[in-house]
Image (cartoon, rainbow, N blue to C red):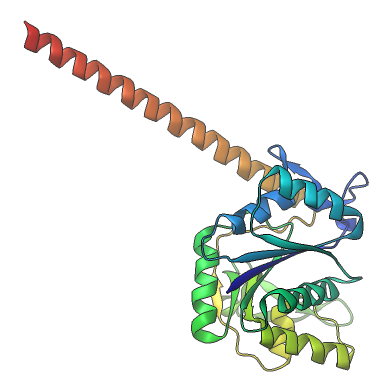
Length: 261
């Protein structure tokens, strides 16, 4: 089975959004989290979805699920104090519901712009190689800093990638790593960093650059602009299709008139 674990336990401090958590900000009439869930709901390869949510947002999340008729969401659970803890809670719930032989696609609740192709590629790669990490190639120079905030190293850009999501693993493998991290009292920025630390060989699946995580106001603006563009393109396509139909009808009418004469 292939299970999506969508974690949205944060409140968006970097967004400076005082009114609501960033996962509930509206994009084209729906909360961001609804767009994210929808991407997995519409992927035939996904068997179930678990949402890990900040406590104050659980009731509203159930409302979103009902309003959008999402059928694959099998649990909405409370997150932890950190992103890592929230993911761990989601993994534990996945084991409880599905057992530990399934694949889990770990994904940010505020990363709505993904498509079925990326989901399918993650699953195919993980089934074959044990894991899959969505990522994009770096197109600008990457440097590391020393303790004095000066350049310590310039990374070879041709070998540098940004890790994104989903990040896909066999549940038993990522759960084992989480338990080690708890024992070692270690906190990692994401799942692939944790797995790498404990010796996993990671496999990269290239994703599109519009796979944006809404962390800042600028990110939110970009995501909204993307959905505006989608709507504009749909309007244009509908307009072109209507024109084609009208032209086709005109040609048929013209041929009919000629034939009648």
